[in-house]
Image (cartoon, rainbow, N blue to C red; front, side):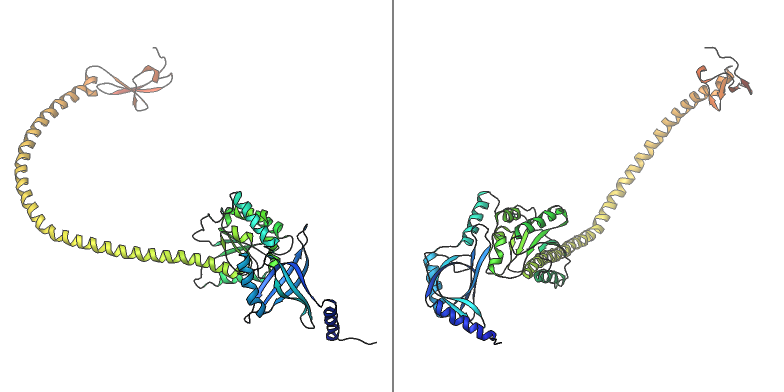
Length: 413
């Protein structure tokens, strides 16, 4: 049987398209990706979405050659005040092409600048306006970034190369700062992005005290894959999250609603890691500065105090001699006064002691016993009240000459 080579088949397709589509056509489409190379040629991606589900239903590559792009871009931007970037809806005049190697594409020849911003950009503006009206758009930005953002909750795909780049950058930082990062897996493209990231945020919120910041990262890709980050629920949840959120979900040319409400927006996962390292570096630099300042101030204070001590030491000799001379004279005078006072005081105290001694002698137990009184003890303690005794107690009675023991038989009150 006869068979065509792939090139021959593609050549037939090219000739067929050239015959079927010989003219140029005005086409409505949304720019999903816009890139220029060093030669000035612009390569775009056109998309169309279902109005009800927002799912992609058509996609095509487009080319704007440098000689056309040099005129088309400034004309469009000056007329509309809108940058020629991904996310806008355009009305372009195109020729249909097919290349045996590069496949189907559209060559842009003209653009109608009166066809304003597309659905993607309009949707973003409307969401941002709603967040602003709700008073939440800047809440996350107003949070203080922790001085040491070391405990990091990462929301990313488990297979994303960007997460590996992020982790490696933190692990091998030049200053050797310690970071702990924990992955909370989520889908980062497709129609389940919103629900998946919201679920990850909920899991982080349940352990909010374990983390300092949240990092949402994703590798590069077409702008059309970022539509999941342009939803009101996801943006509102991130704007009101209680710890700072850092996003690195696209290249520099991409800008999502989530980026607009995050505390910090960087270009890539690696840039997110560099930002955290920079925060740690700033803190370390401040500590070094404070340490140096403290060291200098301590040295200066020690110098001042040393000079003060030297001055005081020099004054001590002179002051001591003067003070000793004055004190010697005072002591001599005081000694005479003390001797006289002591003699008087001793005589007075001696008389008082003699009186007290006489009173003590009169009040002594021996005196009382000599007068015919007795003293009764129980267990070595003087009995003062009959209530202290009970029948059968052994007691000792002291008299002037001797003592005797007895047992209580009867108690009368």
